[in-house]
Length: 158
Image 1: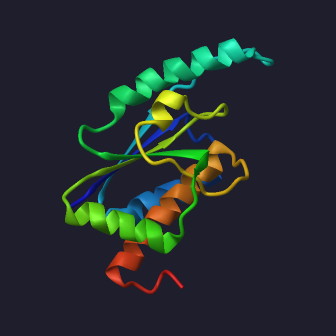
Image 2 (image 1 turned 60 degrees about the vertical axis):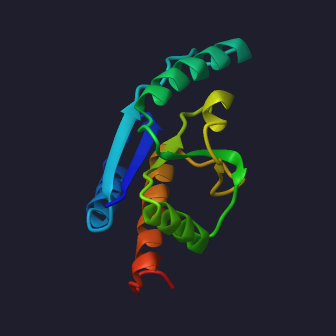
């Protein structure tokens, strides 16, 4: 069974989003071994300088890099990444599964991801819009679930 890892900077604090994420985590148990690792975000002042942001992203990158499973295909989620359809995500996951390779998605914090992390794999973008972390994690889990239902021919995806 393929292992799907999600490394996320920050936690989901709101009950509704946490419950939605837990529902998709439960559903995904039928298709993959899912692991979610939360990285504590760097603390920044209210109006951080670009140097402070860069330093914070570097510190977060170091923590993220330590958690990436060895040999996993890495997909940093970033606004400048490639946009793909649900069907294309399903094809990607199916190809990785067929090759016995695990997958790791990385969600940055409020200032995104460092360039070092973005270079570790093919960046994916869900949109040119910015989404709150708590909502985006649910969206990612739903798309991973949708991909597995497409692969298995279940009627969830229309």
